[in-house]
Image (tube, rainbow over all chains, first blue to last red; front, side, top):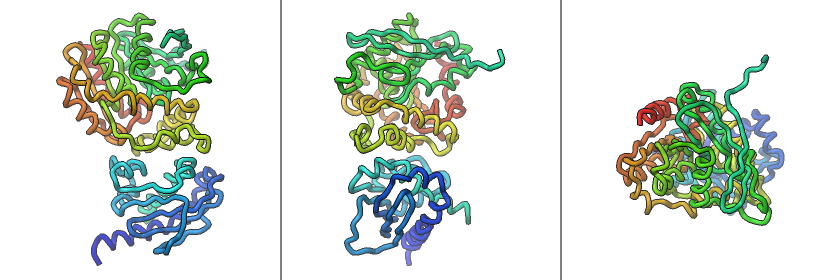
Length: 135
Length: 282
């Protein structure tokens, strides 16, 4: 197995902690009170099907999938997530839109729910940053 | 008096801009060389409050910051409800020159951030002799757009929340939490469509790439200072701009993003004080 696959699997495994991390963050759940959606997050080659109800994760499945539907998709390269989840991300690797601008991330699909809940989504997807401090 | 009052004083003035009267709010503190500060798009002059309570600055400079019409405590002009607000290169330039003339400021220094950083380049192009020095924070003659501004004023998206959420990524991770959220609060308070209207200048009307070669820094020194975490106006945008303007002083600020004066005042002053010290000797 090459380094990229090892890293990718490690990053995807880290992302699977997301439901637990969110449940521990009462403030983030409060801010997502009106957020119901289904979206795809891609950690490198690994897709995740995530459904939110009132800001809480009610479905969280790791792919691959065959023709799943979703409202929007946020897809980052392995390098993007690895940098984004560092304790202090480097300049240009520290925000979803910075990553999009540098070509390491795409944000596609129905963008109204993304923009209406943008800070929630940024903070949700940054939660795995906490894991390194727990190890 | 039992309470400790800040030295900042706020006043209102009536300014004629574009043939219409505008009630404009400004704050000031200190004495000495006039230093007019220009806030970022969609925000207001409170961004400079730390500078106005810093005696290392106010002992030598009369620091002033006005809220542009439509922003902060300044009102939009009469009839605003029937128009779409759009800042332009000419209206922004007119506003700054009118403010300085109204207060009879003698060769002030102007320091602007973001759109304010862009417009100081135009001041250098069109009005260099009016100013002692110009400081552009997060300044470039052009930057690549990084999102669709139609979301900033959309009936299905809360304007204050989305404006703040977008710019939150422009703040450096090292900036203190209290300063980060104070900076974002101003974005949450902006009027509908105002941030978008400011960005009309930034994105559509204010491309200065073909004009900056006319800047003569012998007439008016130009200082450009950009935070390393600013991915809207990246340090490379500032450096590219400076390469076309002989004599420009460029500083890339560590652990700072797009809002140096409000997101991390302590870090910003480390970079700003030497520049102000140099300007005092001009």
